[in-house]
Length: 445
Image 1 (cartoon, rainbow, N blue to C red):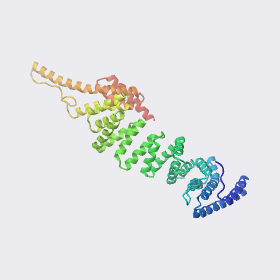
Image 2: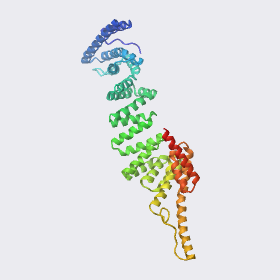
Image 3: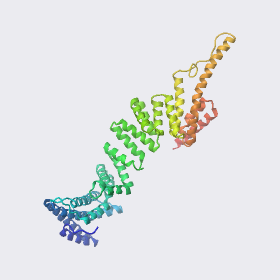
């Protein structure tokens, strides 16, 4: 934009002299320049007070703009030091940044303020200069946030990061379209600021602010897992178990980390909140029936919380219909068979399997043989039943091994159990060796 007349010619002359003195680059002239700037600052502030009393908004707009330029000159030395990595006065830096931005905002507010007759006499050149000026200093609030954090002043850091993310839409200088464009063009730095705000507000126990910023930051891809942990813990602190559970589901879906699902199931197991679990499942089935995670969670709760193995298998089967290679589903599907049969054995559902009872028969001659054959048939049938469960579990674990050959912790111990119960001795020994090598690797770390 074109230049505008100074708010104060007296201050203008002092600033011009100060600029010339500073350009001579000697300590004596530098001190005189600073004295001139300080005198100009007092003159402008006095003029602002006088014109505010008289309600001269157009004059105020020019004075505030002039002060914004002066405040930037006073900021420049500390800004140069910061950019060069030289020690600088952090508090002065941040105070000057506040002053510069406040002056641009107040200049524009007065520039478009209606006069006593209700008319607005906007100086278009001044509006352009305020917009250009503010665009040039937008990221300085971010720097203030970083510097305050470095000083250990967490609250001041949070305040500056918040000012940074709010400024494009809180100022009257930008339209909504301008603000949207700024956020879009500098998406990464705004996401990083919101990430910092989420973590810092969490550390300060500002749960609502942490949640708000974590949700905004999650629109990007910066440290997604950590942000979900912040969200989860904030909802935990607020005792909002519904949002806590939903956060875990969303976290697992987005990150692929099934530990989030495990935490959810563990919570329902420990608290015995089956009704709450049912509500979550019903909501997911209604809203997202085409998602693997819906049926995975439903199956896991049926498997571990309700111990309804048949229902769990149905749910896992639906998940595998959607994605036959859903790694997180393959093991629990296998375990729905293994846990089912182990539970039946534990509950003494069999006459022979899982007991110390020997096959015996009483009587004489053919009678004994017939009685023995009858008991042996019972035993054989029980054994076949038990084996059938392990046989059904086997393909899911073997497929998991194919998909994750470098993660034996996911399948080796389970495969060893299944192979042993199916009498597949060599395969079971192979799993013993895999587990041994895996444990050796862990110990070597």
